[in-house]
Length: 281
Image 1 (spheres, helix red, strand yellow):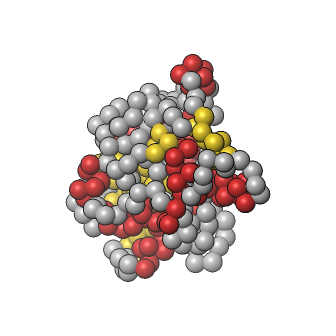
Image 2 (image 1 turned 90 degrees about the vertical axis):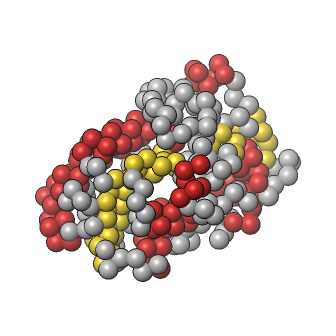
């Protein structure tokens, strides 16, 4: 099995690459990076000729899309994703990492059958989230052999020793003696980076195709997540609530948590609950 990880130098992509290598799944394993790096192929997916040359040389059986660009996600999807999908063989498995942000109604407990809704542009993440929705639609329309994995916020230390920005910031503030405020009524399904990478290695060996909500069974508020993960008492982690009026005005989705029943059936025991013991594992 020839596998390529697009974005293998990134926070999630590097974890996926390491897990694939560790489990010896691929007969040939390749990773790409937008900059020149050891062991990775330099690739700009927005350059169609480069994508076609790479595919003609590698002919991957599995393509994993772990690319993202918060500032230019629309170009990445409408140009880069289209370049990749038009280059690969129709029988190749295409795995796409998507987001919980596409559930902008914010009512929570979403299943795979629930409809994605574009996020209001008042929310600064709208351009990123809405491009992710476009990506799902493009894949579903043009490439039948696909897995779309929707994830909530990804956290934890990856195989390269990198910690996600959100947790790193909170830990730094606490170490400097600063109190942290986090919303107690914004709910997510938080996903550990290692667990998501392990899930991908297992899912590519299974027959399941289509959309899958990944993560543990339990949802957490931002307050409960950071309080539990960092093992902090009330004096350092302070909760607050966002009013419905403020949420509406700022186009904030209060609850984008998943029902992960399908995931738990397919991947029993893979996704850990939030616990301070897992921070550096």
